[in-house]
Length: 105
Image (cartoon, rainbow, N blue to C red; front, side, top):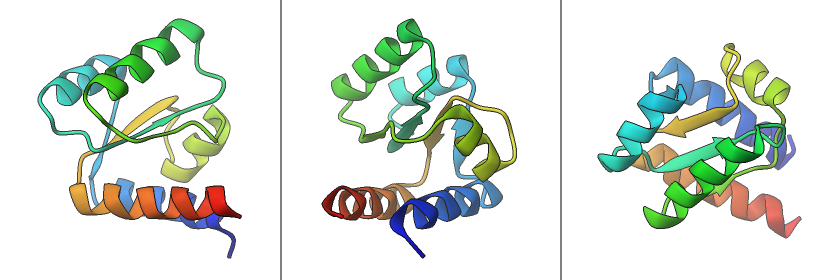
């Protein structure tokens, strides 16, 4: 299994474990509260939304993955979403490892 698929499978696992947050307003409030530890931003997200969440992630030091389209992320979690936050520190750490390994390939 390649790393891209491992990341998407892990994202699906996080969804089943109820460790994802989606929806712009909910995500922004959770980011401000320090409860989001990793963000997925779809490549086909609107420019203003991308900028808003990239700025928030930089300010709050949240790792971001922007490698996937809305369709791919939606398939992984079973819901149509363009931005997904991970609310579990351990799962976020694993996603950072998988993402870093993916960059090295």
